[in-house]
Image (cartoon, rainbow, N blue to C red):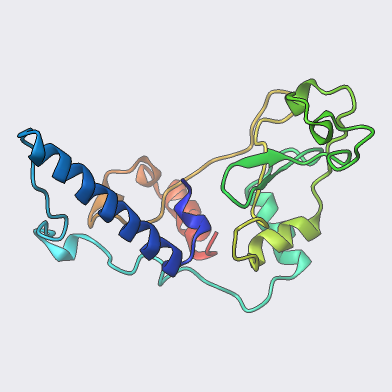
Length: 197
């Protein structure tokens, strides 16, 4: 289950359903005299609340509009193959995009056949363009189906991807992560973090 695909009300409904299912299962355990641990997730408290930033998303910049120039800059930092990309499905999971996917004559999946797209003789990967990147960055679709995934391994076997986690999970973590080994890395990482990327 991909929880990012659901809104708050749908998640509450799922929690209620899981609580109901949990209650039924616990009743069955009690009936059979099978011991189990009682866990209250709300009893657990963070010992030192200062260790965690409760609003980690507050420092992320959310521009009111995205230009093609901004999208190109974003893609230059998260650069991957341009000859193929994946799109997120409504229920989660990512799927490579093919120009022939909805053509009954060309796509075996349209005929109910089970085949991997990579093995299809009619595959014609959809090229990644700036409009798709803009759509990804705007993120208007409630179900997340405008989210794209790139393939970072280029056709020549190289990769231009470097990833850092800027979420500040614990105070002082920046002192021990390797990004701060020298001042050059420090300034590069600070510059990237400041872009909201």
